[in-house]
Length: 394
Image 1 (cartoon, helix red, strand yellow):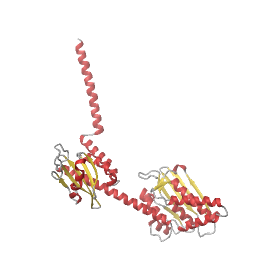
Image 2 (cartoon, one colour):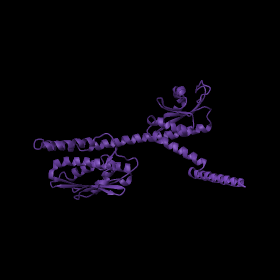
Image 3 (tube, helix red, strand yellow):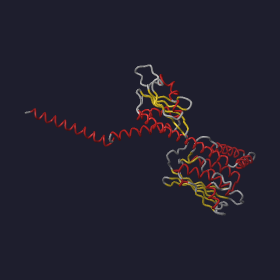
Image 4 (cartoon, one colour):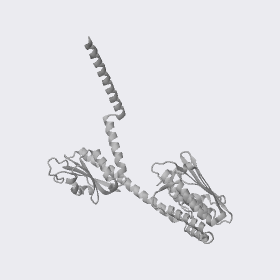
């Protein structure tokens, strides 16, 4: 009488295990999708891993990228070349074939896809995993920059040849983006150099003149001013980093204003009001100092009575609101508009440059706003997002 009970218990356990396994299988399929979905995910994920490495350029990122590219094609070996020679090899057979890569890439470097086999791909071992190859050109700006060679043990199918060509096109696109990044970096550096060149030479002469005037009467103050001048020039002419923190930019402005107050004395007064929450915000390097210099040069110079500059940086949720306001002579609103478009004939320091850089980094809605009129002073305002991907102070 006990045997049926045991059978029933075993059956219940088996059904329970089957239910658990089925539940796990269903959950797995819900999470991972169909086989096609899983394959698509794998391809996209592998591609995403290769992209940032290739964006560093063929010579800089090839070693890491080639592993992901070979995984995409599922070939035993792969090589990348530039116009000068082998950049990298990944997979088996490097000791047997790496010296022949340039010869294998010859037709690809002429812009043609090439399918190679024995004797072009030589191997004396019977178990050699590499006997055939597909070579495709890598191009940037309509010129051949290198070649991608995928190696196989058997003659490649037409599908593999097309896949190699598609991967080569993907690599070419990433290399073009890398070239674009390099050109953009060069342009940004050129804009910074232009802005540095616009930092008025007469400010430097006047600052040194003001320092010299204190050498005999107040040598300690002259020493302090000289240190401020050294720190200001060191910051303004530093050679690394497209971005800085708002705190660093404001500290440089304080140094600049200390030097200007040494020259103007009581004729120049400054109010600085900054919310602590916005001090770590990343901003383009030298985006505020030119605006403050304009406020001094064009707002206060040439007038006998005292002038006042107000600098405010406020916390506004996801953004920092910054303004530089002077009570100086002001200007024609049409001139202000022309300065922003780059059409102005005036000598205002870097207004168009700063506006263009802000828009390029954060978007068109983040340009400068200028409020001014003759005799009414000038207020320059800007907004900066607290976080933007790719924008980091260095």
